[in-house]
Amino acid sequence: MLELENIEKRFNRGTPDESVLFQDFNFSVNDGEFVSIVGSNGSGKTTLLNLVSGTLRPEAGKILLGGEDITGRKEFIRARKIGRVFQNPSSGTANSMTIAENMAIAENKGRRYGLSAGLGKKRLEYYRDLLRPLGLGVEDRLNTAVGALSGGQRQVLTLLIATMTPIKLLLLDEHTAALDPKTAEQTMVLTDRIVREKKITTLMVTHNLRFAKEYGTRLCMFDKGHVVLDVAGEEKAKKTVDDLLGLFNEISVECGN
Image (tube, rainbow, N blue to C red; front, top):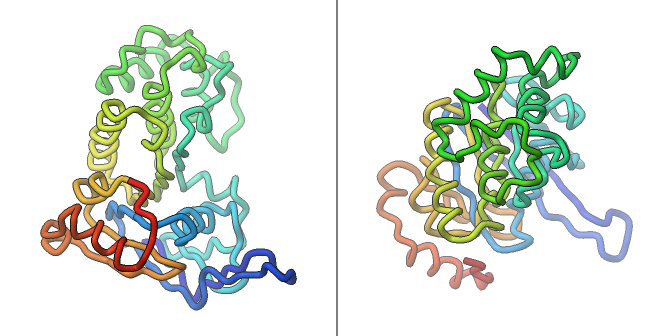
């Protein structure tokens, strides 16, 4: 379970531009939930992910993951239990390294190892077995540099890499926004499959209202550091894209979809 308790987050502290985004903010996610988060720029969506991942620190409050207080933990320590996929397909991989080398690094996250040992014949076959069901067509191109792949191939590879080791939480930060519509759709289908099969607790920030509606078990809308909509189950199923768009307009935010 992920819990944020009484979080305060300020920006430009001590300057004339100081602003408060979160004040006594509370938010929790149950194990196994797939939460889609929508909202305008500045609503707090990405700041939430940054606080959870350790990229940002709160001025006050606590962040707990699985009952463990991780508020003071550094980002690289949290990364052992938290996977993250960014909007830019290049952000989650080393583009000059091969597919196999990237997968070896991901598999040995948090441990000391050598690439020569990590890329034995058995490991290469294991990597092929992981890649084959994804339909990327790269399982026989393990020695290809990741930078030579298409944006969609890189993003799905990044998703696989982020979930290769057992993690407690997956953060998806607008991970389909830089893809063309067809590739974005394919990436979402694969995302949903990986999350379901591995039963990973997931937070997905997206500007795509349809994706937010169709995927995940819970839907939240943020506005100025507040949760203005939080629905799950049948209540979520009853919501339409027009309903979500109407609420966007009602609170005077830019839709961005």
